[in-house]
Length: 374
Image 1: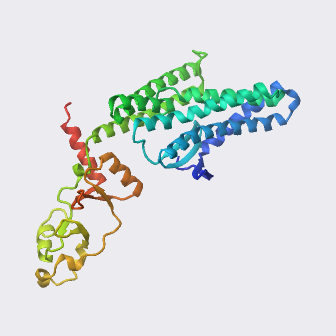
Image 2: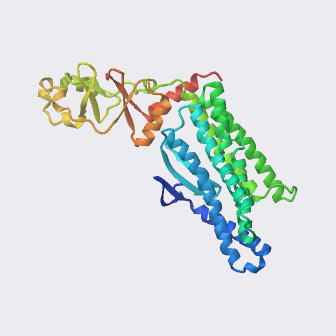
Image 3: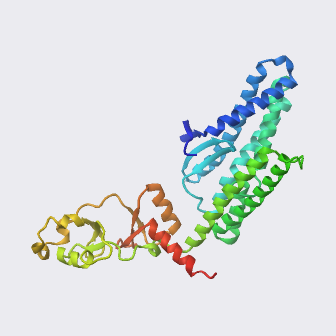
């Protein structure tokens, strides 16, 4: 979705359109225009204008579906980063995962509920308004498009809404979000293979069920369900691990009371790993700043015994500070959001424990994987 075009904001949410959307818009406009031209020959060129209007209203229905997810997420305190329309529909990108299975369920079910509401509303308009002719055909088609949109998304496999509903249910039963994600991902892969099989059979003329679109949807389900399964594996490995478990061994820390000579002897001279800067702590172990290795070169070596680390301490760069009991999965999300390579880990009393980075998290996960029984 990185090449998507931003076209504005909806209720404060950035709204994007993927280039693939324009292809689908053209195809849907053509199909609708051809159908209207066949059903109502008297329309002439107006049939194609109505076809375009129907296509735009169809995508408006998809947008309303995604806004349903977004509204519930915002009500629960979750940031919605963007909404994107693309070839297979729409996607609301949330800033973080739901904190409870109940929240996850409500966000997932909100989209289909909006679609079913629109189905009921349009059905009532078509039934009670007395509208006839081409406009009635447009309303009827949009009515059942919303029904199909809601029903299709309730298929219980990721990445569809039904998969997220299933994930929330399994999460509630097991108490473990990664188990819900793994189960719903496997179900999504099953539906993906079924769609691929039906699509291939249709393309080869072996079945009247399915189409090229069924084949493409199957590949879409397989790809996204596979990614969700990988994410579930990572979450399983991270389960029970906290920031304290991924601290870099021998993190670059030095006491402010140390002399430069003590600092150099303990951390620089003969050290296999030399950092460009070290965190400086006070007598209570709390962070006071940082010292650059290059800064000690400005002091004559003969004076190193008489100059303290504190005298060369400067304010630290922008770093992310987290407590030692922060779940490791949450740490990964924080580092990704802030685009920082390192995080400072502290105890609850503020005492510095060390640093962690993405590579140390990966190393910790590898250790856990190797320790698991084959």
